[in-house]
Length: 176
Image 1: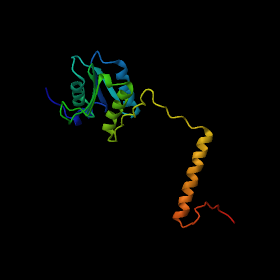
Image 2: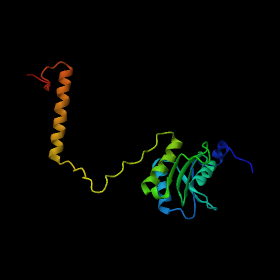
Image 3: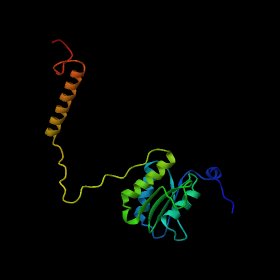
Image 4: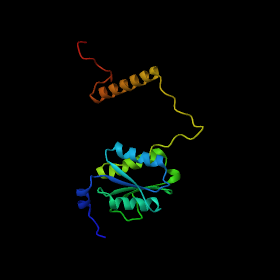
């Protein structure tokens, strides 16, 4: 079978990221990956694989077939994002099924699109506070106003000292 180069493939197909899934891949993970791609404006084409491969194998196959050189594999073991120039067993991203929340699936879909766009990847969200931790209390309008007032006074004081204002007090424009 003749191997088709990326340039030839791109002329035949509209640019998209291939997403290969197994029949037992969780539908919510597939949906979130697609949402991540959509958020970044890169189309994806979802296909169900005929044979049961793991996520990394699927992702590598998808990357080889994609006109953009980027593929995603979703299988029973997890989710992988691969680039066609990486070794077959070294995906760019891999999330084990137990660690692949909907938010993580969406982030990895977005990162596959960001790879194509050549922009920085989205980082994992901060981990939530442990159970039993004291939640930060939201600021009230009055406490927020006090905080902003204190910050503004301090900045104005520092600006006055930097200019040699001596007392650091703010001056209004106009006659004194």
